[in-house]
Amino acid sequence: MLFIADSAKEKVNELMAKESLDETYFVRVSVTSGGCSGLTYEMDFDNEDKENDQVFEDNGMKIVTDLKSFLYLCNTTLEFSGGLNGKGFYFNNPNAARSCGCGESFAV
Image (cartoon, rainbow, N blue to C red):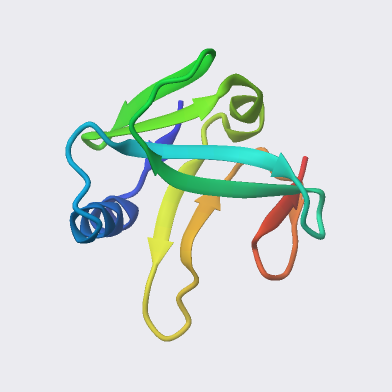
């Protein structure tokens, strides 16, 4: 399962409205090779399902990932932090053994 915190849901809805995206769009998250710790997170809006997509709904929002990424993202929560020391969107991933200082990459 993938989860989305209230703070992230509010920001996603705000961004989708700003970009005039309709209700067919959803949040797509994935993991790719790269970054100082070896793996990086990616997040985007999408409206097309792909083969082997893993589809979840949490907090009234659809979140989609590919099967390979789900192996790294299982039980992860997408969160958002604003304010002076906020870092924007971030992933609270219980599978990450370590992450880099900037929070952009992780290792398992």
